[in-house]
Amino acid sequence: MTVHYISEQNSILNHFLAQLRDVNVQKDSMRFRKNIERIGEIMAYELSKTLPYSEVNVQTPLGIKNTAVIEDNVVLCSILRAGLALHTGFMNFFDDAENGFVSASRIHGSMDIKVEYQAAPSFEGKHLLLLDPMLATGHSLVAVFNKLITEETPKEIHICVVIATPQGISFLEKNLPDHCHLWVATLDEGLNGDNYIVPGLGDAGDLAYGEKL
Ligand SMILES: O=P(O)(O)OC[C@H]1O[C@H](OP(=O)(O)OP(=O)(O)O)[C@H](O)[C@@H]1O
Ligand SMILES: O=c1cc[nH]c(=O)[nH]1
Ligand SMILES: [Mg+2]
Image (cartoon, rainbow, N blue to C red):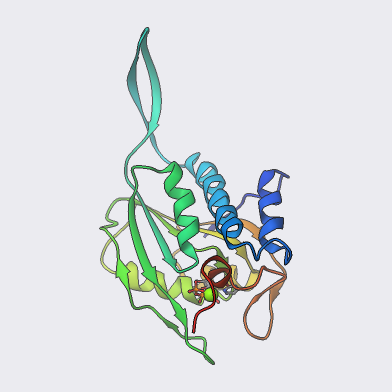
């Protein structure tokens, strides 16, 4: 797996990350969702540099300009719930992308993940971008990957997360194919006893959409 860290150089990304983490700011759920969305836009821009482009002639009012445009074969697929705001950010930039949604939830007291809902297009020969803001143990992403990728062969697979742990990255490296790309906005220290990322930001789904029963 190739891992791409996108916050090594200081940028406005770090400002958005600071607001996501800050207990005095993150309770503003509209700002929380907006910051995840803005990070999605930044990640989409960075990732777009690695996608294939083709030359087209664009007619302007005054002439013709030969320029490169992105090939239209991107599928954005996010993991519910927390992936939704990240999905919006990616969709703001990849406006012609196809879209998929999958649910994943932790089963209390175990490492098992329940993957129930799935609504996704074909991935065959396409660039699949799998989106989830939090990579904690990595079990949700691997469970979703195994449910989604069965018979089809995407051309490339990019997994995009905002906060990752070393344990989560190792788990993906052991359980996903080598040709996957992992995009990480920032790397944290590790996990606490409840498998939450530390220092992390808390529960991304709850902060974005409210507590669930
Ligand atoms: O790497 P893991 O240890 O599997 O944990 C990460 C998962 O946890 C969060 O979802 P959560 O289960 O909280 O669901 P939610 O988005 O509905 O809150 C997050 O969005 C990931 O999907
Ligand atoms: O730290 C974590 C771990 C899993 N899910 C979250 O939302 N936060
Ligand atoms: Mg949650």
